[in-house]
Amino acid sequence: MLAASEVRLDTNALDFAILGVYFVVVLGVGFIARRYVKTSLDYFLSGRSLPAWITGLAFVSANLGATEILGMGANGAQYGVATVNYYWIGAVPAMVFLGLVMMPFYYGARVRSVPEYLLMRFDKRSHLFNSWTFALATVLIAGVNLFALALVLKLLLGWPILLGIVIAAGIVLAYITLGGLSSAIYNEVLQFFVIMAALIPLTIVGLHDAGGWGGLKDKIGQSKLGEAGLHALQGTDPGHVTNPIGATWIGIVFGLGFILSFGYWTTNFAEVQRALSARDLSAGQRTPLIGAYPKLLIPAVVVIPGMIALWKIPNLGGGDADLAYNNAIPLLMNEYLPNGMLGIALTGLMASFMAGVAANVSAFNTVVTTDIIEPYIAKDRDDAFYIRVGRYVTVGGVVVAIGTALIASGYQNLMNYLQALFSIFNAPLFATFIIGMFWKRVTSAAGLWGLVAGTIAALVTYVGYKWAGWFTFGSDLDESFWGAGAAFVVDAVVTVAVTLVTKPKPVEELQGLVWGMANEEDAATATAHDKWWESPKLLGFGAIALGVILTIIFF
Image 1 (cartoon, rainbow, N blue to C red):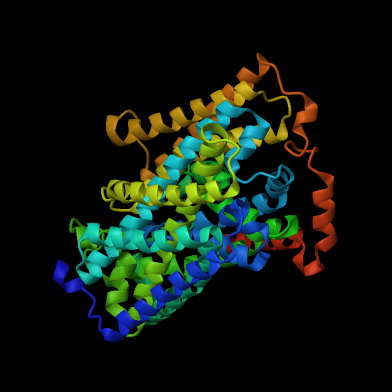
Image 2: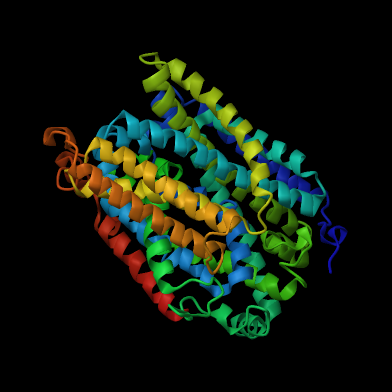
């Protein structure tokens, strides 16, 4: 078994120079962006002025943190090809739905955040409940990214975990506090390319060593994953489950493909905020649709290296903490990359984790400032006050995230933890959103109590499985599928029941908030500015078609 000392990277001055240059550029972007922050809209939503290609890359990069690099790499090693379901079923359809269906509502309502939509569609109670739960979720997820980075720094450089967490947090804090969302977004575009520069060579070298895709398939077939690890959906029939995730197609399609996926991509403000910063509705719609295309291909540079690591790293996933599945990609970098490339790889890892932290911290400061402090604590202050408060909130969010990073340390596969968080916080919110958006009869009281009931249902499912022993599932990921399903169903039932015994809002107050009542001028403007190759429908259905083709190939 590999000892901890055997997995330290043999870094030299060149590697650290590359890392240092990257940090200087990141902070430089923050200083430049600061010059353009004149109003609170500039700080929290980039003045709604950014082009679609910038927001589209930032949209996918914001998700390209620990969730993708360590989490999906760990899933590739632990579950094999079945991990692609998180992309082609569990991401792209929801991204298309956000662009084609939900962005007109967000733009039509002129909201600055996702919780603000609940305020306009329902009332202050559901708005405040979601604001607090979202704030909690963002600092928990930011903590995952901080811990992931600290884990890599400890594993590869020998730095103590706490030191790594504090250093990573300090860098992110500096550039977001300076330049707000614009700084985060422009850095996310830079981070996307740096991450790809680290992962693409690793995948190519690893596949070559394994004898190509065919050689890797042979090696995985002989590993502890076996033949089942080479298929996306085979072995998912109810009553005869043989796929490594231990889930049926019902859990994958309904729990992951519908509830978890749509709940995350369409209501998670850390993602939606990037689309809301686009310069018009057309650019806002195209933001997630442009992001869907790189999302289709990311499994090639994340899942495949995880599978290569299962073959290449002896005892991966064993009892040694340094050989946890979370470390699959860092350990593979240690196997293959020479000096210079190691610097790029380390920089790519740093970029990915900082993108994840920045996405959640920038969403956190926006929601806390615009959805909690401004309407309920300090009303009618000048713009400079809210910008100043936003910076203070950013500091507070990063400090709390340092604490929540320690929670993530108890999970050998960070994806299991993240999916549990999504089932608790995003799934019930999606149920409330989708019902309130398509049924104008839904009442304000129903919006609140549906949210509360759905959140409790997901939490009970998780606690009952993880600690109390009330439920059994095929795996931690399978629990998140069913936990999300329980949240959605309970939320929907309570929402409908309460609606039928309470009074709805007047129809005239729902303009731009309910299906069939979107602001017509926004839709007309979006259509007028679209060239045929910029058509949201063309982009959206093209991404869906590619996802279907890839799923069939790897079925």
